[in-house]
Length: 169
Image (tube, rainbow, N blue to C red; front, side):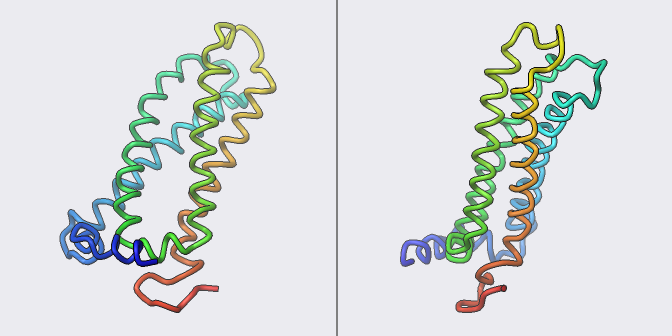
């Protein structure tokens, strides 16, 4: 707990959490949301294509979205870390944070596997999408829905930021 308190007392953490500057908390939160949209939104588009929502459209060209999704993940890693250390005690003692992180890392793992197993297949657009690809798409959708939901619930479950000893029920 001392380490978490030390993180929160870093000058950068105090600035992110307490500054009235638009470049502090608001900017990190907006960039985190944009990064999430890049990863979860584009992943959802891939998933829906693999599930047959656009049956006449080829799926293989959507592989070009992967670099954009990795950039979004990078944005989220940086902004999420800044937001986390600014409120380390609250976030890292909340079970919901760990649920969110499991969904995020499983979702990223699924994206990696999907690229290797589905998009590296030269026969991808030559016939029906394999059942294994559809399973990965469903898993991906569940992960991103879970990550976004758990992320939003961080404000409503567990410890309350800035109020030690108070917990949302």
